[in-house]
Picture (cartoon, each protein chain N blue to C red):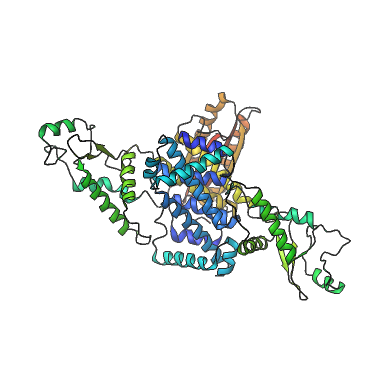
Length: 304
Length: 304
């Protein structure tokens, strides 16, 4: 968690519910690149799912569902229709928050395909650049770039428009999102912010744009870790729900204890060794797959 | 998780992100009694916090923050002002989703205080009821009620209005929420749905309302368990974040293994016994408090 996130959390002292919600918001908007509106849309969809399940549980009573959630019955009706349509067509609902937007993640591949670069060519093309100017500009490029040409502002804008168009075609269930100037600027800034693309200023004309990485966010992107964190947390929550239903093959262990800092390393090692020994002892290939999720750390809230 | 929730999840096959978001929505709207609007408000607040941290990280650049999240700069400005005001006054922000609404949780205590009942009195008062009618109606009441009188529809409506007014006064940071007819009906239905209150039909006039439990949702309310589940999950997420920062006193253990169903019980017992033994060995009163959160269960998604 970044410094400003940690400081805000400490100042707000949120409830467990708000903490989890904040983790999701930080993940979606900061570690990943969802638009603000996409996050709110995902939250609204989740709420619609909750309303829909109440509707099913109440035997299809629109008025009662509306009373329980404080929504107008005609809005409940619209929600029910939307969810049922999504379930029938198998699309639309889950698109909102499934992954990083494809207009970001697919950009490097499309760029590499449309503007490939070979060692024998200049990296920067353009009629107006002299050989000397080319050499000057290329000296400013970082080493180990992907095999793609640098492109002009106009080509970069076209690439963004193309990728946005593709993303729209592949999510027919969502409301169409036109490519406004602000959205194009958002996409461009996200690519620069993630250091997937850099802008190369050109004293003799319009700037060039350079592909820095063959994947969005680059190989060391912080977007990888939080994804698996959320998968851990989602599975942890699923198991927790099953545990409250007293499902016999689900076990929860919670321990709270006081440990001297000098003993911590030994306690960690012993725990780790036992778990490996235990897993090795009971593992039998071909039998049902079970998982253990465990976190061991300070009880208090002053975590980074 | 209830049957319709489970079925919907299986049909949607949501991403880890959506799973956690859906858990929150089910918790807020179904296991608890947040209004639909309160949940959306909490999600919007979480998004505002994320936008605010980007603003801080970007050195107070409104335009850049707007670009990164695809929001107009003037909206970023309003968000920043709202969060800063919330931080200064120490209120407002965290109210949205802190707990079950007090107009629900405090109703039993206020009812018990305003309409106490003593054994010597009739449970149902009202000028128009004959003694025979009273006996007839009281025979319909369940045993072991709290020591509160049954009240009329009008008295019940007044009680709801009073509690709503109190809740408004205690959350000065929130936008005021007027007590519409729909909101009053929502509150009433929630109280009936949670079996905190029952409606007693009266063949000779308006119905009576009866307090069934001295706490909202009653002592066996399902609202208790999900709360601690979320606390587990929030702490698990906090530790996971710290772990990705390689904080030395945080350890993650993940094991995936195949276990024969016949061995499961023994594997669970051995794991449990080791953990108790290990915790006993390293526990030293007065030293820093550490916690272990562990879930052990099926890897697959077909959990109840």
